[in-house]
Image (cartoon, rainbow, N blue to C red; front, side, top):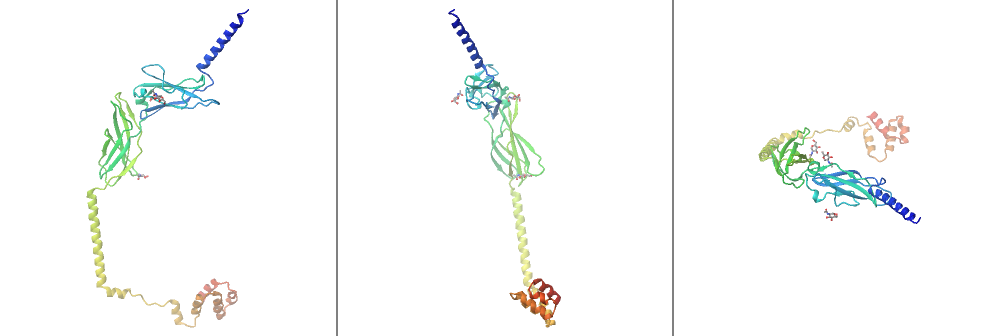
Length: 335
Ligand SMILES: *[C@@H]1O[C@H](CO)[C@@H](O)[C@H](O)[C@H]1NC(C)=O
Ligand SMILES: *[C@@H]1O[C@H](CO)[C@@H](O)[C@H](O)[C@H]1NC(C)=O
Ligand SMILES: *[C@@H]1O[C@H](CO)[C@@H](O)[C@H](O)[C@H]1NC(C)=O
């Protein structure tokens, strides 16, 4: 049978071919990307996902998109890329379009399953950042604020700034003003007071959607002091200085007028220190000796003199010199 061998090889070929084909479709061995999310901030959007980890080889990713209008998958300029992020191309900048994306991992001929996102509509799903505060000009009763919108607006957009402001005290009651101007004033403020404000953008589109942005970080500014108050303070200070000068002048005049009397009364009284006084009354007392000995370098000697002279029992112990404290206590006994 000469035709058997070719038939067998043909069968084998078909079998292998079908195996390879099924392998190319999807392999259960390569996991699909996880955490697939559309990140969109101020209408700049991208698809991001977590990397797929395998033991060996470099995993590549491919991203497709389709819009609500053309229900057909298309390439997105992110075919077999190594990064785990794919920015939206210019062709998908239309904010009202509904876009669905899908991504899969690829390793050689092996691919993972596709992972699809939820429908994404930029004007509904994007996160709007806070506006940028360019400058704040303080006056006594208002703050003049200039801002830049967080993104370039399109025809049909209507941007409003919600400005919350409050006095920086313990009881914070916030007031809100709404404006569509990028240069606006917070009015009717107290002078010389610290005020804080934060701004949030509201985007109203022609499809009547209201999208609120993130709050800006609070900024605080002190209002200026008004001219009237400044003048008032100057007058007050002037009056106080005048008063002070007058008081000083009157004081000096009185001093000069009664300087003799004051001199008499302010003379220091003549007093004799109590030790001397007692000594003068009774010179036989040894107070002076004690005082003398205090001045000397070696207090031990002095002790022996004093105590032995008195003939007290303390004489012996004081000779071996343990005592300053003895001196003091005996001293008080003596005097
Ligand atoms: C596709 O990506 C390449 C490389 O990042 C870039 O040079 C090119 O302009 C992109 N094309 C489109 C249509 O976005
Ligand atoms: C867009 O917003 C809608 C409604 O809030 C939500 O259901 C959808 O999951 C969001 N799309 C994406 C891609 O996050
Ligand atoms: C505002 O007041 C709070 C407490 O009331 C204080 O902690 C904070 O430092 C103040 N801000 C400024 C800018 O002084």
